[in-house]
Image (cartoon, rainbow, N blue to C red; front, side, top):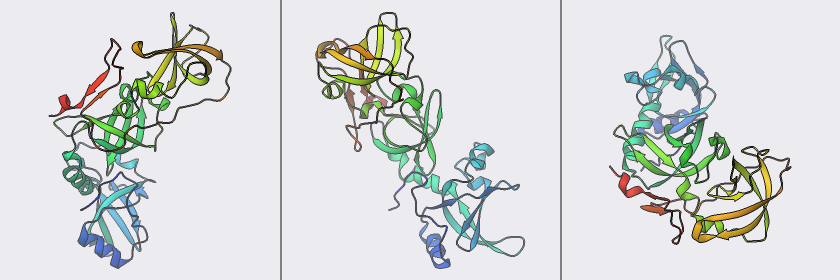
Length: 307
């Protein structure tokens, strides 16, 4: 059975022999190569072994044949690894043999054979493809994108998705929801641990590095881990994203609070905490971030999102 993966994760066809090309045509294997140009005929061009590969616009992406895909979404493939199936060998107007390629068919097969079977709570691997202020778009298979909203990147508030992820980064996410058109919304925070799991990595009396996330009149919120923040004294001179060292004064599990004291606000090097997953496969029905004794409940009920 075909294993559907993110774009740039398939076998390269750039050095295929004629026999390998013929085998790929017969098997329908999804392969990849670097798109070399988007020409005046609105085709992506490739080099596959000794052949030129041509991908007409309607074959460049799922929905391109209906006008749902803009040229910009295709021409940005130039210079990047692009997945496709080889439909066959044909002659061009000059009588030269060339390969007819289809990324759209690879995407349709990925959707029908993999993505359409996923439900809210299923954990998937993804690659960040581009970032907007409201979230990160991620390839969940054959270049099909899903949105990871900024408020789903962690429990701790951030000002930009770049505070968590970079373009090209491989990450794990859970499916948060799927609409009638099959478009996914992803979430990451449920894989980064509960309050107790994160707080267990810290001890009263130690001094650690944190990242300022917001400065309020009543205190400064400082991130200690992607899903954990504490509160220190108010410091109007600090700015979000600034690294500081803090002394852990108290950890109050029943109130989900960590009291901090700022020790050094002049750290020079910018930092970003690594994503530390508590789960990278399988399925989650319900996730509860808050502690049993706290009066505030923070949870995600994936079962309620199932269509």
